[in-house]
Amino acid sequence: MQAKLICYELQAKPAQRTMLHKKLYGYKDFSNHGKYHYSRPGIVTMVKARRITDGVLLVSEKQANSIVNILKKFGAKTHVFTVMAKIKD
Image 1 (tube, rainbow, N blue to C red):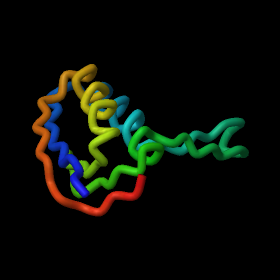
Image 2 (image 1 turned 90 degrees about the horizontal axis):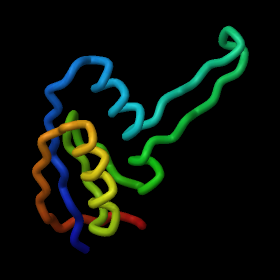
Image 3 (image 1 turned 90 degrees about the vertical axis):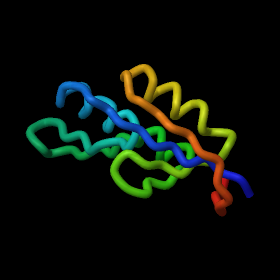
Image 4 (image 1 turned 45 degrees about the vertical axis):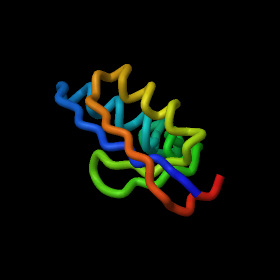
């Protein structure tokens, strides 16, 4: 099955980079001085994409556009390649 390999580069302030990574990969949220823990999923976990390394994602063809749109909102340079890989939808 064909998949998309998305490579991105973000040259922004650290706060903006952190916001992008939270949106993509999710984060753990703590409230009431650490008494409660919440796991906030990111778009990568919701669409079952695979993080290859820093700045490289492997995504099914159907979900590639949603991730590329988020990356472009944050001003990231993106390169998208079509590859053959097994990705479960």
